[in-house]
Length: 80
Image (cartoon, rainbow, N blue to C red; front, side, top):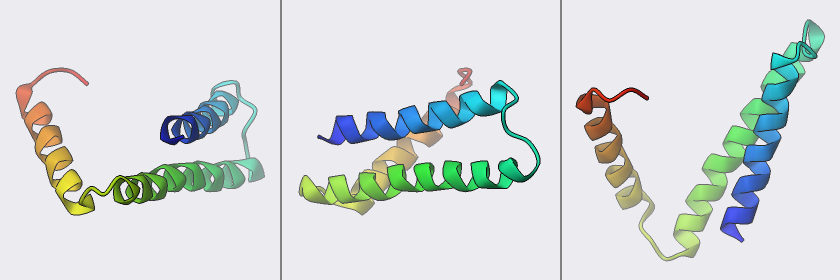
């Protein structure tokens, strides 16, 4: 279920991004678009924290491990 929900959010972000790239967002629509992007990213963050807890894992430990991995990658010099 976690993967399905995550894919739905990623699909929503892809749709919103496509709308910008295709030039369908401008003027007043831009602020509405920004709000939708923020909501979808927030959904991913909030849902991920909930899933970690549902799996019985420690959220802070997971964050520490992710920070460590991100710092290691950033210092590796490999392109993003």
